[in-house]
Length: 92
Image (cartoon, rainbow, N blue to C red; front, side, top):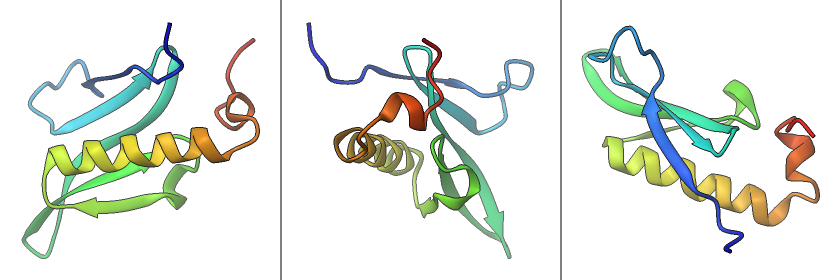
């Protein structure tokens, strides 16, 4: 059995599948989300880490890049934080 995360992606809003908004989960743990956004006519993908709320946000040019950025940041948090379960408020 591996200790690597098994990140699964799904639509954030089940009632609006046309909306470009996706959430990532590692088992029951909420990892974060990505969504398509725009400012002044320029579209971009924004990602949010589940461990820091709106404080950990970044922009990417594609959905795949945003997914990879969030997954990489999650792996970094898992490797560097002394107690990820507490950081993510995992239920015991």
